[in-house]
Length: 433
Image (cartoon, rainbow, N blue to C red; front, side):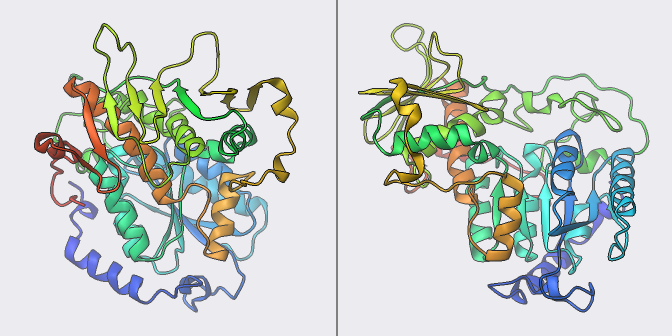
């Protein structure tokens, strides 16, 4: 492990706690700190943790916002880290921004979080590396944008909510479909009862992940592999998990249980999230999860207390990510696409309907605006936690081939002590949350 990886956890947490206690409720004090030279209403200083393919997309999305300034990037790969440091500096040089003092580059996110002049962080690491940085960032008094799926386990999701609430942080989950007008329209119709009682919801997402079986490959210099693994079990390097340098594809670490939940969490954190929104379950979830039995039940099913059923898979004849089936019609939604049956529903005056859902036209601007107002964004940490828990519940039913009963209030399995042990896994020291 690199020298930076051996930073004292106790020292870091002591610093983070002190920073959090010094943070005012309404406005992050570091924005106006003499150390940063900032004045009231100046830009939010941001650091980016993880600058692979998705991290690069987020960096490109946030950079143009005049209300923020990127001051640091962090990645375990030297080439990616230095490339994005240069990218940020070239961006502000082209704008001739006199307030910009340079972009720092870190291997270890804990060093970035120790900086008192950083107000917010954007986390785009692999899924197994979401929980610890989020909890640490919240304890350090940072506002947080974290990519979906929010966590690797059910326990991690709740730990993240607890840390964000305790420290009164603004948190946006990267389930950006909530800021797509097509999904807003569809869920608005559903929540206003325009297709009657919801009988079924179909969510067309991929399947669960499997245990990693990749062979060892030679290690090249420039990557802190031990820090990439972090809380995951020790294993030899393979480029499928962490391609070297500035790559343009999405690495397949998401196909392996040590790091992700597969398509169930990857796309599930989008489409199951929309199902939860439409069903009004942002602070709850299903009560039963039933895997396929090869006979009567062909697709995994989630049953809610009100009788609605969420089905893992698409509805035949409908090429949409999410389809709500009600007693009086259907609503079909996908990215940039919206369809309703009967068609007359598509001409509704959506802004005049009695139930009005949070409306965001830009997921990133919504986060920055909420840093200023201290309001909760459209995909707050509780929303992200509840949606990813739906994903995890499905995976647990698949992996263990058995039906499960779930209490969304206590977030425990009912009458199943063994299943309750599946809510977390054993992280490597010192990365337990």
